[in-house]
Length: 70
Image 1 (cartoon, one colour):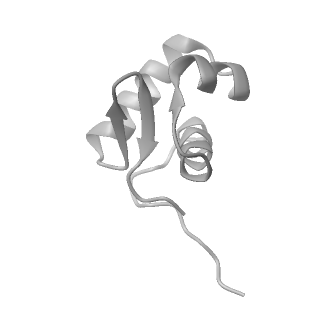
Image 2: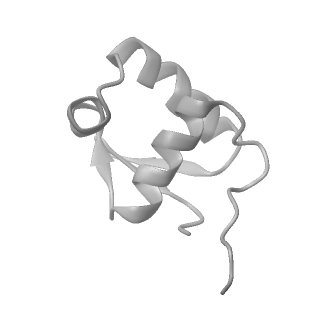
């Protein structure tokens, strides 16, 4: 059995949650992330900004996608 690891640079619990959600779904909008994960929008903005700056999430229009799906 192989284990999958999160990319380096994804350290916070919310960052991991958002990354894992995006890596198992094709993409998600901010509203979808908010509704599915029950994370405040203001927090999602910060988490997504950090994940984008670390190169593990990209923005495609209104949607976000993991650049390295698990």
